Every structure is written in structure tokens, then in C-alpha cells.
Amino acid sequence: METATTNYKESECYASLSAAFPHIVKIIDVLWGSKECQQYLLKLILDTRDGSRAGFPYSAFKDIGQLIVIHDELFPKYAPEGEKWVRCNFK
Image (tube, rainbow, N blue to C red; front, top):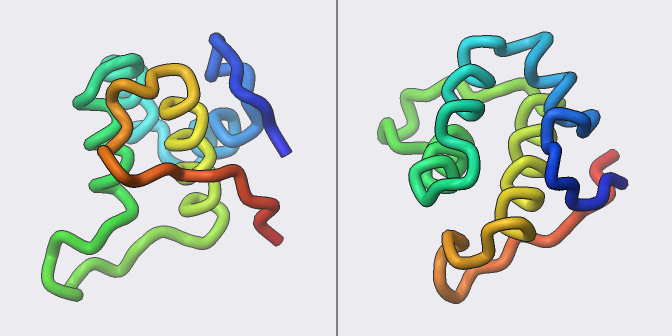
């Protein structure tokens, strides 16, 4: 399990997501540390297309989830009120 790092680019989840979805990681890099980044990460894993979205493979879902956790730990003021993502040991 990863711990929060000020350099999120050193995390395993970042490396894995970069290899599979470089276009998404480019957007994350631009937005990192902002409320917009937190919203973007959540938008990636939540269905906003009335069920028509195919979704990510589980490994990408897990990586995005871990980035949400890291972002929320480093920038708690942007975490949705009343919601807290917790680190999970995904299998």
C-alpha cells in the first residue's frame, strides 16, 4: 500500500496509469493540487453518462482511486465535504 507523497509521480499508481492512459495523466499533471483535479479524478470513475460508459479496467480504476486518496491527503481542502476516500488494499 502506498503512502502520501508530495511527489505523486513517484507512486506506483501514477506509473501504471501513465503506461496505460498517458492522455489522462497529462490532464492530471496540469490539474494536480487543485479542486479541479479532485473533481476530474472523481469524474473518471463515476458514471456521468447514464450507464453508457464502458468504464476502466480494474487496474486503472484502482490506480485512479489511489491518486484520489493521495490528492485528498495532500490537499484535504478540496476533498468533497462529508466524504473521505480511504486507502484500500485492492486485490
